[in-house]
Image 1: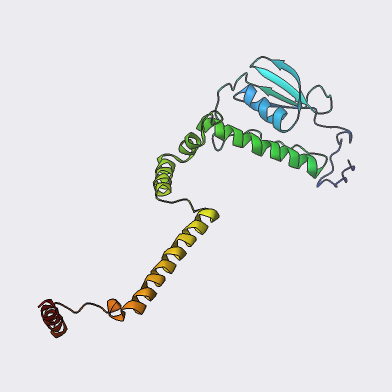
Image 2 (image 1 turned 60 degrees about the vertical axis):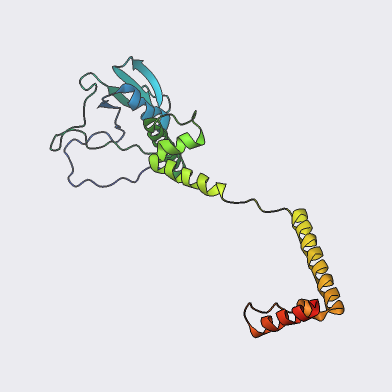
Length: 215
């Protein structure tokens, strides 16, 4: 890691602190030790050096005795400070590379997604329909039921061999009908003429012809 550039102070002090001085460690008051360790160790990658049950824990980087102390001596189960309260504004942790910082951020994002899933309930042992209902509520069930009703009215497409058989049957019926019509024309073309309407002059003439033929 490159040595940081020295910045000139605004005002020189009479007895400045030694240039090699560093922040030894920071102690933070937390509400829950396990939740704090899940962030500082599981996400950021600090190593747990010592733990005093549910009261305190000490984490570090690179084998140091501890860079950050976490305790619940006066804050177990406590809430965040109210607005207008004095205290630590923030703690900055410097990673050596952007890649290392990105890996930590991805770990944090994965942890947040897992916690959100746990809050909605364990979905791993449920079926697909149960997971949809748990995540989307009753609306998902209504949509799924509507899709099932639609699926009942959808016919599966016929296979190519079935379509071929249907085509051959239709072609055979058409050919037979054409042959019958052609034979009827050759025997008696009048067979194909439409019958006259009842009560029409043509109908009356046909009836008279039949009566004369029957005598």
